[in-house]
Image (tube, rainbow, N blue to C red; front, top):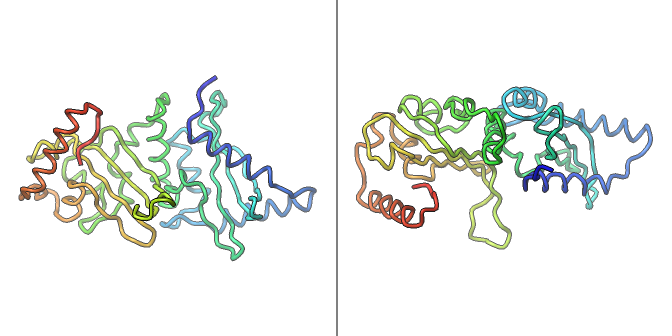
Length: 277
């Protein structure tokens, strides 16, 4: 039997927990379930205005994403959830099962409750990239690398200089592995840790003059907190966000060069494949 990924285990367990608390029965209850599902479908929107059905349709065309069933469940605290179950393969030859859940608050607010699926809030391209990146990590066959490496798909990340994908194309940068598009949750027991946030991490090769630690396996990391703009985290991301293509490397601060060299040496010594900031 194929090993179920950690994501599959967590999502499946989450679904089973919700279903264990489901108390609705009978035709009238089923009618109520359908009404709640339809309300979520018609009301919830990604930040760019995309509907759930639009996102599901688009994602299913580029990723291993096969929608299965819609339903509702009740949490232990009697909170209602709408869920969409899905698998990676039409013939269900995989033992992996997943679920995306939306929490329906008593005030009518609808929000994505599955942390792994939070990229869906950024639109269909972000969701597709997140799923395809996970396929690559899980060694899934026929992952859509063309979509994963196309800079235009990262235009949902915006900077003062413009959209990230457009900037990468103008800077003659080609995306390589790994790619990460996910949502990071802060640990409750670590008050100093950053708040929950979306994260995009890319490795690129850029066919432009510049320091080798930028133009070969250069690391681009952006993060976005709720209610904030995208913030560059890595050295290269900060240059992309503050300078137009063609002038990214006009001036290198000594402390920046020393920091990069230190990380490079540490990475080489450890031989752990860690990426340079």
